[in-house]
Image (cartoon, rainbow, N blue to C red; front, side, top):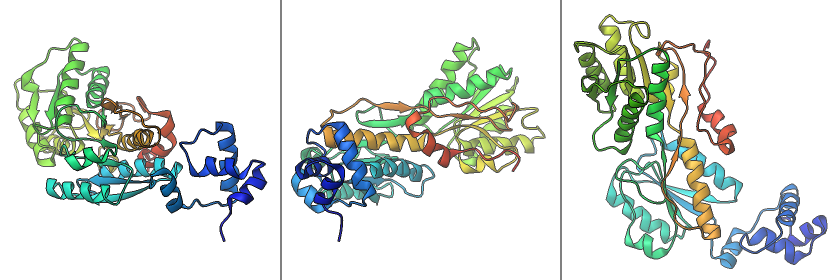
Length: 361
């Protein structure tokens, strides 16, 4: 038999009614010191709330839906981990649906989740606007975590791609490079345009003239990075460094350089973006700006629960900064580590998911 509210009341020294309000109704005004003390005692005693009874009292199920375009994407699992870690701290669970990049499946998922019901929805790495009339009419809050296309919209948490690109270029300038090329991401992507804008802005900030000949269109893929790099090596005044808008294209650029008889980083420095797992394994290891995927999920969950529990209003787009991981492909001292724009509230969890292994391993 589970621990009862009466037993917690005796152990904590508060009345049964106060214990009940503190544990079963988060919207009821209870002194925070009192709520914390009761919660600590309940946890120590192994108390498990009756979620069905709570939902009847509060009209909340303590469950949110997560809709992802592709749960096999390398960026979706850490987003979901960030969401679930925050939910776990606040006694919420999640239901995950994979929409497989299909807008019809996505709409069906929205309708199914709000009929379950759930208290809100997070769209993880969404490629569509997604919101439909049923979701609007339900009044349930929703948040986008890493939206891929379209203009800035409310209730979205995205990477600060402008900042990340500028961080990469600034690093290369600090190493003495002036002829810095860029391999862009695929046209039409939010992240591609923002990273290109960050590249241009940092060149201007460093008083370096923008040279269109040093910009090549990429496609996010290895082959696109390889082909773009071969073109860059053939310009009249070739670059001494390349910033690739993602790690796959950076890998392609490295292989293109090696096939052209160039040494990385001695002859050409290369920096990527995303901090994919393979960047720590290939040789040379790739200097890259991390995608703050865990932080986006954690922040999205925090904001969604604020709307669910406290009735907080819609918020403007929030941009989360990534970090620069300095490895071998740029020619810098690999013992350096640049850590910027990191939310202290998620640092410990992020280190578990995004730590850089011992460079000597």
